[in-house]
Length: 275
Length: 298
Image (tube, rainbow over all chains, first blue to last red; front, side, top):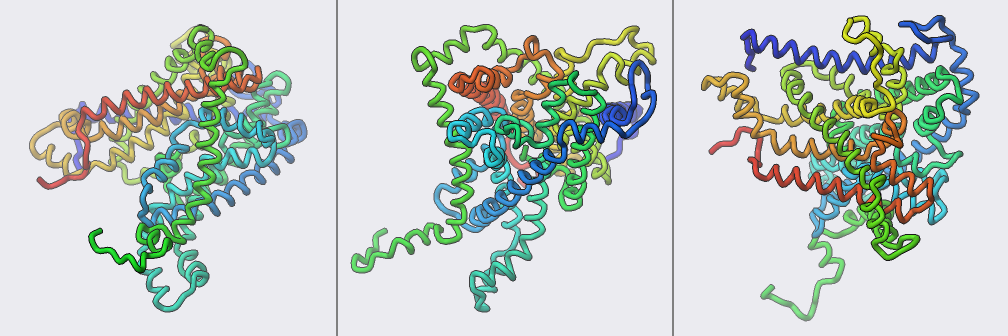
């Protein structure tokens, strides 16, 4: 490793760290304001709130019907994770193990939904879903969220499956394992860590997925992030602290799963050619 | 095939298996069905729908878009915020990534940076509403430091959207840049240093040429994200004024005026503009070196 020891290099290094620190400070500041505000009795014209209370959490819970919203959010996320695992993992297995004509085209087809931003696909997709009567329903939101999730699982799982030696499967065949036994005793144990990581990432991404859910959700199929958007959008109707309390609940919900996910995956995998 | 055995032509199943299409390959079908039904079909449907406007000929939506300044100016409003944010993110990400690659424990920093991405634009917007407000900590600190005398207006205008895009966009750009920068073989840098190149020359003559292809892809992905900005443009910007971005126009057409045809047309235009910029960047990229970033022999 090369270490520069000139004054210029040290100044440069200091400037870079200062910049990084400034960025992180601002992110921390904006998150701290949300938390503090949600706990404050009144916060105007001062550095810190006048007093602290937890009543906004109770009022946010009731006003925004967060019990319902959280239930719906987890139902949607659970179904999306389950379906994208059931559909995505076999597809990744096929793509990792077989070289068929047109494979490149198929892979491109799985990459495109990850590259096209949700707003671009969301509007035509929501239009189609409303035309077939799924717009605004639970399943409409699930289907919309499958658009990035299934390709995500496929793309994440292909390299994982490719690094598992096919000879192991061949050996199982030689020893007389049938398809079920091969699946149960060879593939599942080997694939499980990868599948778990991919599905946790899908979970985090689905909780935070705003655009697609926003465009397809109806009043009874809103997820937490969409409910948060509407309450911020209609700011002034409710107390600011109440909205902030909801934002904190959203943050905690997301971060818990993010921290669990980060035990199994690298942070860069969350963005790595994925978003 | 010169050798042919006309009597026993292989069965369809065998012929397919030769091309590696068998039971395992069929596992692909459900996922393919999902992508075709929920991605390809809506796009095709949207394209056709956009060509069947409520009134007028098949191109009426597109003509309406490009003759109405309130609509076509959204393209420039969007470019006006998305291009600077993308460029700035990239310029900031590069030196920081170069510094961070030398760190042994990058995990903490990457974890911190992945948080704003994960929380997403809505939460960042909600936080910034307070943080950047006239009584927020940002303005207070600036006044306390004596840099300004009265609070500067950072919300419900261009800068609110800019800040929120930077906060979610920069970590994204940074994490991708970091993976590209770490992918360059350190031996190349050591070789250059041995030959007497200082840090600046190592960057300009060794790293940058190797990184250009990756940075171009990085630029494209970040740009495409920033170009489709929606929630923060509504919550932090002036959705009827200077930050009336194209996604707002598309949303309003489809879901406020219930003109799905026009909404689809604007979504298609949005996609085409993105493709044009991406195409342009990738075309420029082809002028540079493309190939392995690991030290190759020969």
